[in-house]
Image 1 (tube, rainbow, N blue to C red):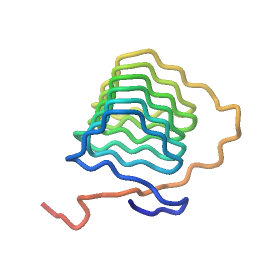
Image 2 (image 1 turned 180 degrees about the horizontal axis):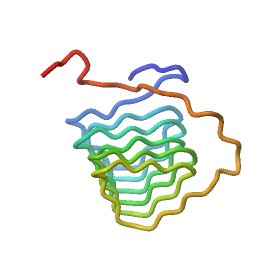
Image 3 (image 1 turned 60 degrees about the vertical axis):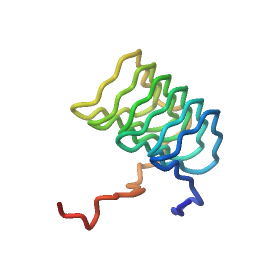
Image 4 (image 1 turned 180 degrees about the vertical axis):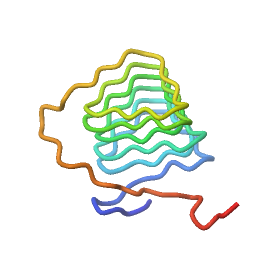
Length: 132
């Protein structure tokens, strides 16, 4: 587990495959594979090479892996260049980077709750210090 400003979070490592639903109150960092639905009350981050086969409900999302299922985000979702989403997307704020793959319907609606100014959150950068 790692600690950020809002509390303790969890990591699914690259060698870990989970079959079943996940419910988490904090943040979740995924490097491995999940086959099941995810309910996350914090920030969900998927690394390159990670995958989820199931529906995801979360507060915020940074996607670099593959999702085969629907993605519902109450605040902001970022589909980075290595992301692949095969399912429907619902969010308040959507950022799609060049190279991202998305196949499904999309609904971007202003949240019913007032969204405070976005904070820059740095979860992890495993390439820091690696100048290759």
